[in-house]
Image (cartoon, rainbow, N blue to C red; front, side, top):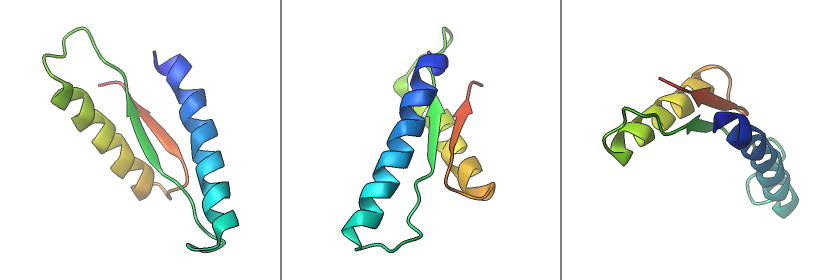
Length: 73
């Protein structure tokens, strides 16, 4: 569920950005944005879930980056 997945995604966002900064290859301002969607009862294919997650990713980027956006529908 999104309630379970969102905190995991947030911890990953923080950990990956910290690791990228520690490596120094990307720079001190390295951040991660992500989109998250759960599988809904009416979904007929994985493409539907991935499309929502992709839309959520672009929403995260539009809204300033460095965040995880969860999309349900």
